[in-house]
Image (cartoon, rainbow, N blue to C red; front, side, top):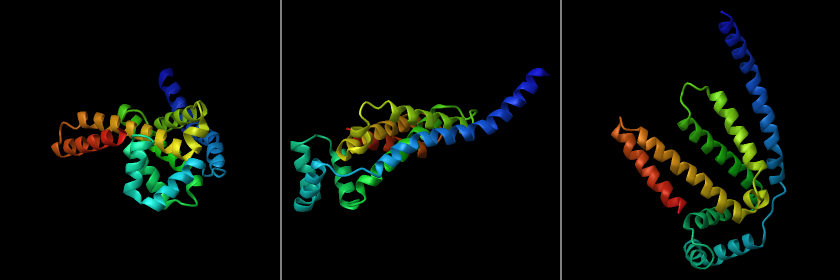
Length: 195
């Protein structure tokens, strides 16, 4: 009987504790978003924008792939980002990266953790992992605020998590061939983008 009473008290405790914990962890991530409002283009970003405007999208892809770095997906994301987010680009980037990394991490953990664990516990785990990731990043400036570095390294981390997520879901989708084909296509697409 005492076990049942302690279990009820624990459930009541977690019902009030988890929202406050998420709020506190969210406030701890808030400085990274505020610092993003002070973000600006750097020298190599201006060079990329100038090359994009003068040579066009495909020529920029070819030139930067053969002379600067050999990653089509990162160069393509940078070109698209510079083309459509011209003046607000540096300000939006950290928020977009934090949001997309958090969403992919939630989907990844939701796939790994059984459904018997409450979603609120997974949210607390995701926010805690994001706070640890951002707080202990070797160079937050290069990983989050430098546009070329952020799009190159964060995009690779996001796509790699997506690749593993789709691979796990493909292995678990043995019951429905329709979902198996979908996850197989998504897995191959994520693998191609990660390369």
